[in-house]
Length: 334
Ligand code: ISE
Image 1: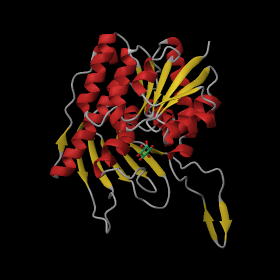
Image 2: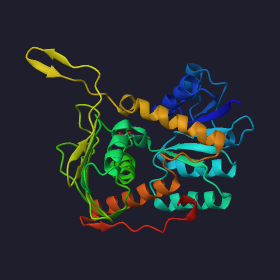
Image 3: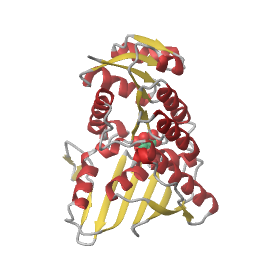
């Protein structure tokens, strides 16, 4: 039996997921590509050999010839379209963030709880990256002693879209760190402070955040969406007996004119190439078995990322340390 997947969104990530489903996911068929812009949907569908195109996402989700859904449309559509998938009782891999508003995440969780099962797997793909997995393992086997701090840098060449706002540095980009740090450390956040240097132009400036965990660890995150030089994501975990840091993945090194150099990727798709594929394979297993994958993020993780992002935006705006106040974890997510 092959799983017929509907791809919602034919932008950068939609096109990437469509290619993975069509070429690298045995057991799945790219049934249709849906985008408000029909020409864009058609171009991705033709490139990946999808059977059909659509412009209405709710209609596409409800179709009888669709078994599972991948949502890669703009952030504000993630929560409502996830709800449509739950209503249709179809499993969905939804790109991060689940929403920029924690209230929307609560509504999706409510719908899943009413439906009595998890339907939504979130696309926090860094959990599938080997560097973070090795870090988590080092943490858990006690090699480094108790975790004290985690330093994180997240730099993009430039903001990914023209409508990318300063707050999105926190709600869209930092969402990755909010998720993967709590995954590696196995803890939750207690408070967040946020700071911003001034740029000489009108581009989105970097944001530096300091988070305190409920276990008394410190986490700092630099988000620089206009770093200009390359896509550069780094993390270092500091324990009481040692540290572990992620390496940049570069397959070659050039030595020339008295200089040694390695290249940066232009964006995240190449850096996390393997992570996306592992994540999508896990999603297919989820669709086939109904067992939620142990590594993947669920709606609770989406809620946690959103609530800390909200506190982060507030902390930056008001210039003060802001507590992160979460609801108790519902049983479905325990
Ligand atoms: C983008 O949405 C992503 O998910 C990328 O992984 C991240 O690096 C980028 O900053 C985000 O805007």
